[in-house]
Amino acid sequence: MEKLEALKSYLIAKSNLSAGAISAQVQSMVLKPKGVDEGNQVLLHNLGYRAVINLIGFPYQAQEIASFNAHLMTWLADNDDREELEDAYPSISIDLQDAQTANLEVSLAFEEPVYISSSLDGEIELADQTWVLGSAEIDWALSAEVTGNLVNLAN
Image (cartoon, rainbow, N blue to C red; front, side, top):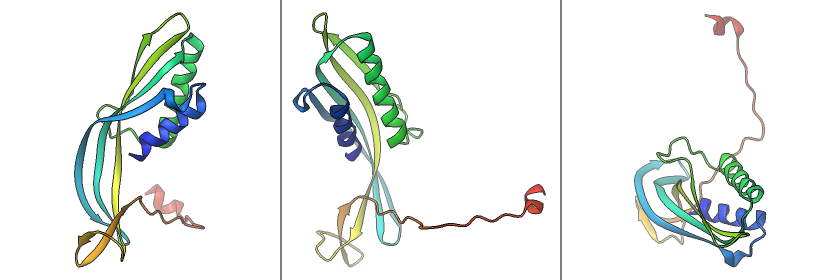
C-alpha cells in the first residue's frame, strides 16, 4: 500500500495540519493473481484496495478546499495510472465543525503490483528457489536510438 502512504505523506507536507491530524486506513482489498515471470522478478498479483484518508480540523474556507483538491488531483495525475480503475475518482466528504474548520474524508481506490524476487534469505518458496516480497525492479536505459523509414510509414 505504498501509494496510500506516499499520498498521505504528500498531503501532510502540503497542509497546515499536524501529522497526527491526518490518518489513512484501508477499508477493503482484492487480490488479482498474475504469476508473470519477468526474469529477475515475478509479478505475484495486483492488489486493489479502497482507502480512506481523514483530515481532522482542516481550515475550512473555499480557497483551502480548492487548494487541497488541486494537490490531491495533481498528485494522482503524476503518481498513479487510474485509467484501469473502475472507480478512478476520489470522493471527498466535508463535515463542518465550526465557521473555520471541517473534517474531510477522502475515499479512493488504488491498484498496485506486488512482486517477489529471488533471494537466498527469502521465506517464500517457488520453483526450488526462495523469494522475498519487494517493489518492482525497473531497468532504466541509459540511452536509446529510434530509427524509422518514412517510405515504410507512408505505405
